[in-house]
Length: 286
Image (cartoon, rainbow, N blue to C red; front, top):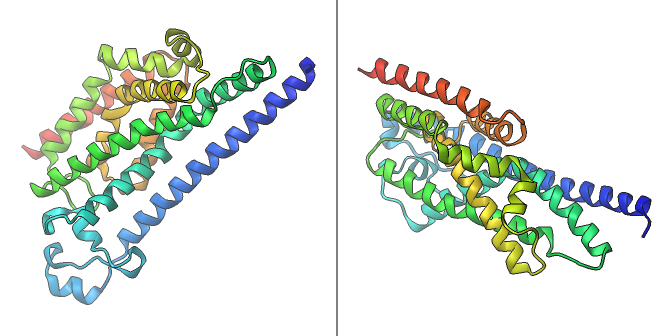
């Protein structure tokens, strides 16, 4: 294959991979938007008036198969059933896919390009899909932890129906903790691996020819990404897990941290702002 033909094939592969990533992200965001809109719709004004407050409000509707959304998102209203846990886990998993897919795109495009060239050279490597599956596995596992944290906060009546903490002190503490984490060596080390796909691959011994090896490589990259971003996901409990603008803001911050070649500048600036905002919340609550 000539160099010109190879370049054309590589461009085509990058377009295909990018189109797939955009499609996955769009579907995930569409689900989150639908869910947020659905939860924001009151089921019955008469029921809300009769309740005298949220404790008696029935927020279920036919769009969600009859599930009591109010109880699911603020489980202090009643104990969770297994279906509630599955529903919230699905919400978190889809949301993580929507938030994290854009930031991993550079790595996947690099993988797809190298994969096509390796195949042309007679040294094929495992499909990009295996790597991406490993990466998403980490965030799906994180969704189990996030769902459990939501259940725990709900049991202690620390969440409102938008899935934001109604305690200014708790919200301030989370913000301060997140801001301080932005300055830690762990954050810096993980972010370096996320910002430099080539250096990450070099440190892990390069691409893998076997599917399980590519899956493990994706898991490794996902773990670095988790170490970089988990504390930012905890901020969802401060602004509201179903607050679309808040979700979009955190997603943008994650994307900027990973793709803007500014070293630690963005994390450290955002960290200072988080600490200041958290201190202000705690001060207001005292």
